[in-house]
Amino acid sequence: MGLFMTNALPVPINENEVLDWLGGQFLGVPVSALIMMVLFALFVFISRKTAFGRSVFAVGGNATAAQLCGINVRRVRILIFTLSGLLAAVTGILLAARLGSGNAGAANGLEFDVIAAVVVGGTALSGGRGSLFGTLLGVLVITLIGNGLVLLGINSFFQQVVRGVIIVVAVLANILLTQRSSKAKR
Image 1 (cartoon, rainbow, N blue to C red):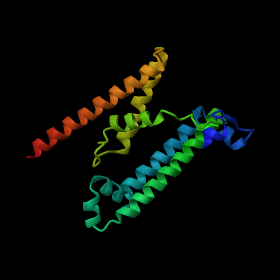
Image 2 (image 1 turned 90 degrees about the vertical axis):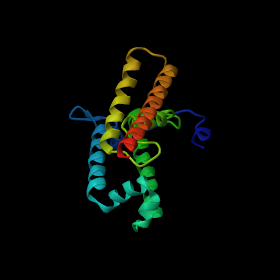
Image 3 (image 1 turned 90 degrees about the horizontal axis):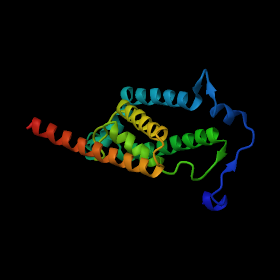
Image 4 (image 1 turned 45 degrees about the horizontal axis):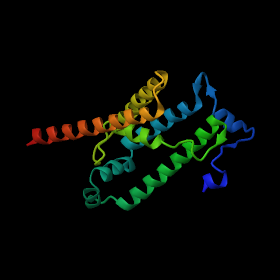
């Protein structure tokens, strides 16, 4: 709908102090990076110190077992999807602030980077395992690889191929590690 209404063109944002600040820097650090660090610390606290955080990992690991333990699986899933939507909105605002315009296609392809970062960070696509710190490391690795490919002047289409290969290798490594650990437990 946004692409249709704007003819797929960016919509400039008029002068706005809040968006200018969000798109700028504070003490030499991008404000968006500071917001990411604050949110990361908040979610580490929630995941480790609250019942809700433990419920999220329980539902992600085995929803049936979580339900048998008395966790309202439906409620946890609804809250997680709501939280995901809220964080996507925050990300959209930060991206618009950085670009100085609203563009319906500005984040096309980022989902591929997100999947790559999560998988490289050690989260199993089948569910059951994962950590916030692993995901953060995955984000840093994928960002460094992406920046390196840009600095080397690699074609953007080939960059997607490289990211795809990284995902495949990470998934295969995850499968092999899972098989080895299950054999070791026997």
